[in-house]
Length: 260
Image (cartoon, rainbow, N blue to C red; front, top):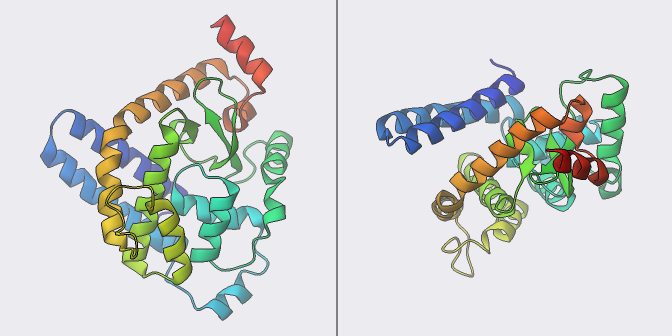
């Protein structure tokens, strides 16, 4: 079975191909690529998330799992930059093991120190989402180093796009694996701001998915372009590999932007 990292790269490439096919009007290719994307996502679910586990055995088996791995699982399920509060909620609703909120406070700084001491020694790092204008760390948002640079960027439209994407991801997971009351609460928190996603009393993952995908079509292209432009600028302006993952201080970013 392919590794999770290989599947994540495959998923990212298929998403780009789907967007290109849709942009050129090739609906046949878009549908074919979309089917391949769904299959890759299913493989990722099997490789990383596995089948639903019973609470007691799972907690015993994950008791010694490092904080960074708990965060990585939650972020990988969401597939978008997320605040610690959402990471914690997703972890508690969909995964096992204890994740103490206080331990997230210094996680990104610890990851950056580890990367600077031994670059790329780990298969992944919990890094910073980066603003598209200043290439600085986006306040309070965590990302995964194996994501593409564009996926880790956050522009004006990104908060809405990422909320919709996260809702779609969680809804699909619940459709495929079943939901729990905790999972429904997390999905409700995301879906309540999506038109047509709830009736005010009940929540259906399939309805949430469809409503989120409809709205996502409105914002996705502009957001994707803004993120891609910022990612290209980051490659040109940030020679330091650590800065490409963890951002630069605002003063440095301002000087680079003024120089450009």
